[in-house]
Image (cartoon, rainbow, N blue to C red):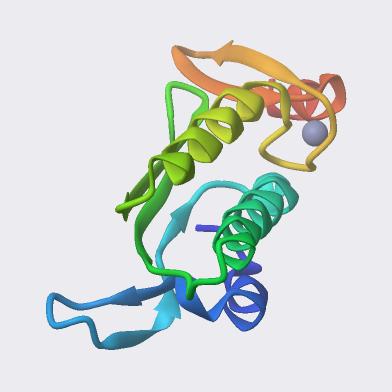
Length: 127
Ligand SMILES: [Zn+2]
């Protein structure tokens, strides 16, 4: 679980996890990934927010979950705007080059059959 979720929630309150009635749960949609992706997620949220601001509308979407799968970031999100999905796609692809531990440039590595994105030094530490 990412450690800086509270900071993300304060900056992007619309990313709060919500129940089926749309009531906020008081915490961010869970981010099951390393802290290295903090900046990646921050930039993605900022870009999504700007999209709504540019259209002069409130941010209207649901973030369900962010996780790592086969080394890449997977964002589970619900929105009526196709552009939101386009932004998400871009960042999911970008995640394959961002170290999940430290945020430096990395690549997908296979560590005992487990795929994750690491820079050279974080990769060495995991071996
Ligand atoms: Zn690293």
